[in-house]
Amino acid sequence: MKFDKYDRLILEIIQQQGRISNQELAEAINLSPSPCLRRVKQLEEAGFIDGYVALLDAKKLGLSLVSFMQVSMDKHTPERFNHFEAEIAKCSEVLECHLVTGQTADYLLKVIIKDMDGFQHFLLNKLTPIDGVSGVQSSFVLKSPINTRALPIL
Amino acid sequence: MKFDKYDRLILEIIQQQGRISNQELAEAINLSPSPCLRRVKQLEEAGFIDGYVALLDAKKLGLSLVSFMQVSMDKHTPERFNHFEAEIAKCSEVLECHLVTGQTADYLLKVIIKDMDGFQHFLLNKLTPIDGVSGVQSSFVLKSPINTRALPIL
DNA sequence: ATTTTATGGCAATAAAATTGCTTTGGTAGT
DNA sequence: ACTACCAAAGCAATTTTATTGCCATAAAAT
Image (cartoon, rainbow over all chains, first blue to last red):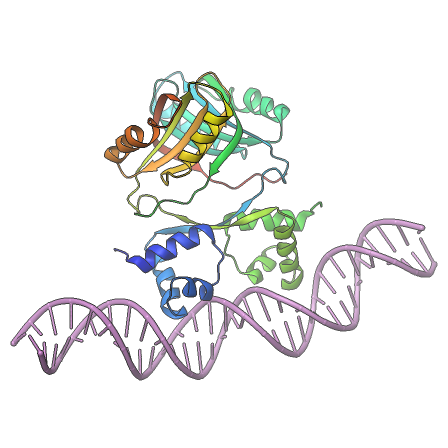
């Protein structure tokens, strides 16, 4: 499936306003509501749209500490990796877990935690005990001038 | 403002299903539609909910390369930093830009690009030329077993 | 225990989504 | 260039959903 300028506009807008009404969206792209809705549905079914989410304010929820953690593994076996991923999936403070290239580490985690006590607890009682974790290097986020999930549309 | 179990449930659900209808949401938390909607509106106005977005499929859009880039600056002056952030804000391939602690780097970028050619172009023609950028170290994402923005609710 | 306040439920109204049908516009073939 | 065809837009009717005011109820405070 390919998409034209209308689809592009739709995707751009709903990436920013996920709950815009179909009528407003239709108006924004200069199309009447019915074909606009049909296009959105098509884009959903074709898999261009993975879903819709509400973005919450971390600070309001008492989560003021964001950290990127570079995790090294001792052995690079599938078992190690699968086990690590399964364990890390249980941790609600882990927002992202990426297997990455580079000499520095094997995994890059993005975690969000209440405070330093919570961070210490995560590091010592949850992350380090996982089999195969041989090294962890943490960076704390001071500020995030850009933080989006809106993809550039070609 | 504080919130009770209903609010918690609402936040948990809309973090996953940002476009759930109020009626479905009400049913899911065992509340009638009117108070349910009132709570959602309150949460929005109180700032717990930053907004709603559609999540797009990066691969479908031809964006198959995700990279984390650690950027070092030569001088740690506010001018350097402000200028860097302003320049980087113009780059649509930059999904995140974090000022971070750690000896390794000053900024951590998360970028998404079509392919290696695009990456090379970004690195050489966009990132490196910015005043003060003294070093860049890139890691490529092989897979992301966890990739969410859903915050854990206390 | 009584008053007060906050919150849930109901019902009516308004708005939005959804669907079938018609019409238009653009494309290909002669 | 004309005609036939296909795809997509617009319209209108229907269904579903959101929204609001009002009343009832439960919790909290005095």
